[in-house]
Image 1 (cartoon, rainbow, N blue to C red):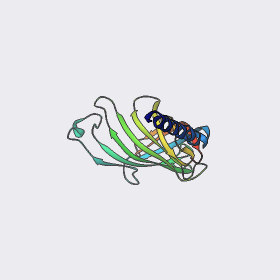
Image 2 (cartoon, rainbow, N blue to C red):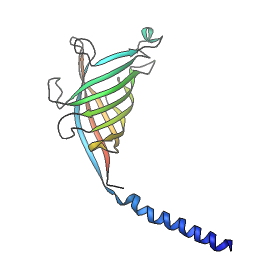
Image 3 (cartoon, helix red, strand yellow):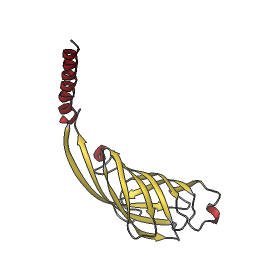
Image 4 (cartoon, one colour):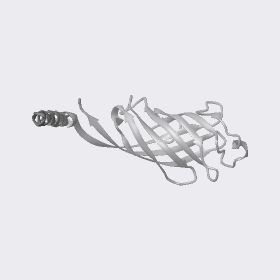
Length: 184
């Protein structure tokens, strides 16, 4: 008597999983590749500072790389390299000097678009940025809106630096794969 009950139970369970499988994947529509270039405008001294130190380690003042300094960032993103170029969003988040030997930061930033084609969308980048390298790659680890379920890479480089005005401009080239999901 137990064998028929077990067989019915197994049949019921397996048919449940089989019927649920198509529903789980039925909403997938497509994968899209987004390529984009913009410029990050960094202002690291007053007036109109966009990078604000919020914490320092006990070794920061004696470190040649400012190791242990943590800053919050709200850097404008522009279409062109000049700081007066059209504003399309902000890089917002936290950077920390994270290497004793070279000026390298760990960045946890959300790229928020406030204008243009991607207005209302954002993506997240997390990783190491060695400022001595000509080109640095930082992973894209998620996003919203047009960047829903984004994964990809940012290649960044120093575009210009002006110690007299405390400004630096960085070029960001983005290659992101996004997956648009339908209703599940």
